[in-house]
View 1 (cartoon, helix red, strand yellow):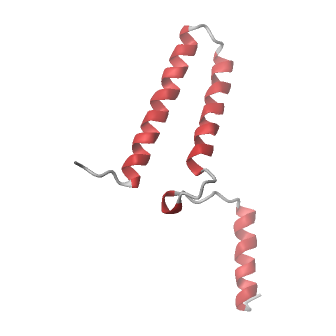
View 2 (cartoon, helix red, strand yellow):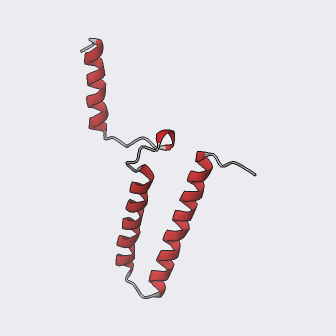
View 3 (cartoon, one colour):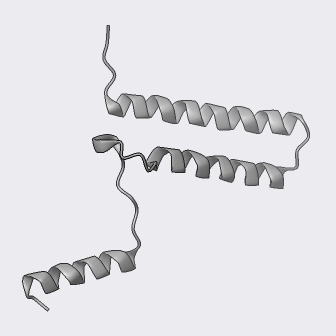
Length: 87
């Protein structure tokens, strides 16, 4: 029996999410939903999936790092410089 690594599980989850979003889109188009509404639904589903992936449950090493802005990175670098005494 093969063991799945965290990376292969993530790939499977990503594939399932993609197929689900595509199937939802096809279903909504078949039901006559306006394309503008379809775009909004797709963005909402992508946001939900992203929130699920990053989660707040502390999944340990599988958890992806949170994205930061350039300002956050600059502030953090400045704080490190100050700690080391290199202002």
